[in-house]
Amino acid sequence: MSNENINVNTYREQRIRNLNALAEMGYEPFGSAFERTGRLAEIRAGFEEGRAVRAAGRLTAIRAMGKSIFADLRDGSGRFQIYLSRKDLPEEAFKAFSLLDLGDTIGVAGRLFVTRMGEQSLHVDEWTLLTKAILQPPEKFHGLVDTEERYRKRYLDLVANPEVRARFDTRIAILREIRAFLTARGFQEVETPMLQPQAGGAAARPFITHYNALDCEMFMRIAPELYLKRLLVGGFDKIFEMNRNFRNEGLDRTHNPEFTVLEVYEAYGDRTTMKRIIEEMLPHICRTVLGTMVVESSETGERIDFTPPYREVAYGDLVREAMGDDWFDLDAAAARASAEAAGVAIDPAWDHLLITHEVYDKLIEKRLRQPTFVTRVPRAFIPLAKACADDPSLADVFEFVVAGKELCPGYTEQNDPFEQRKAFEAQAGEEKEKIDEDFITALEHGMPPAGGLGLGIDRLVMLLTGTEAIRDVILFPQLKMREP
Figure (cartoon, rainbow, N blue to C red):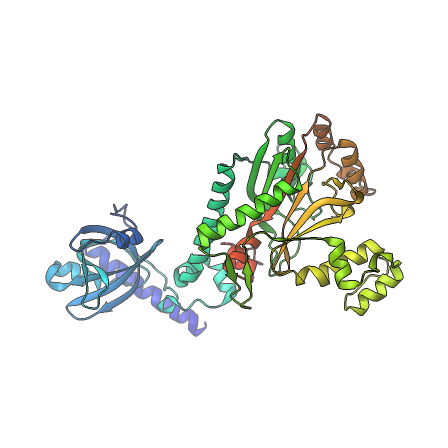
């Protein structure tokens, strides 16, 4: 057995002895509800010396000084100092407090006062045990530093690292403000199936399961798009959904197989309608949640300014800027040679279209640091959007790119069932069974012209909190199970 395991067992045994001693003194180690005056942050905000309050929280520090004890309580809102004096508490209550350990949860009642050091504190008249912690917390609540352990034991990470809790508070606030922004503009939040008979709305490898009651194969959704568009057919004209998608693909610093996406659709809108939503919503979030339009990366120090308007530039113009004005006049062989000379690896079988997109993906997109709408993208890559009126080879879309990563596509949505079928057929190739015939049928009943967008929430939170790894903005990221 390792020294670490010996220490864990020793601490655990000592805590159980303390638990038993407290129980013998009449303290229930896993107590009942405790009525509070408010959360600790609320008590601090409404601080009034001499005011009687009741508070509860986890003990994160204990400083015994003979006849007096100072301790720190922490709840979901913040920290507050408490003070216990031997002369103001029954002897047994003061003695019992010495059997408490870091991580225990207690309730206290007393009067607010300010210490000689000027700190707002609570003078405890009585206390009660609410939960005895059997296991030792990270040392001094700063000891949980191993990255994988932090993800596996997020509950300890939240306790040990206040900045982690603050990041997730920010995520929660961002989601709240997105909903408030859209609701205030007449959008209705809807829910569409997570389990679907066909995986549609994007090109991705799905998670597959079996529906026993119907004896059929089902798919965890890779996107809600096709169901949201069915609702446009049904008469909903301003809708959004913010929920999970699932893609059975890789794990890296910007990808998790279970992730959160916002999709918004507006009947009678188009790409420009969606652009306006982004240029209004992101500044709203920055103002209300962050209090600033400028976000700084915690790792690189790069500063991103979300003050609108944002740059708009055509995909083809970006390619010409990077590869030369004659790029689209080159044949595939010449384009391949030019791309490889620029350091981009190219598959010999690729045509000019695929070579161009690889150049964009590997060379151009990552250089777009400030918020940018990339428009007029090749239609072959976007089968659910309408073509540009002046060039059927291009899609009337934008890809919103920030800090070198696509954050959000926005479309003038395809509502022509004949064109949609052609696009699906081209995408499906020989696998015609992958075409969602029910969706085509819905379009034949008539979907109004519409704009739509899909915003990656996890990546948005990463950007707005200056975080570099997606696992740091997901409470419980996917990890490989440990060997037993």
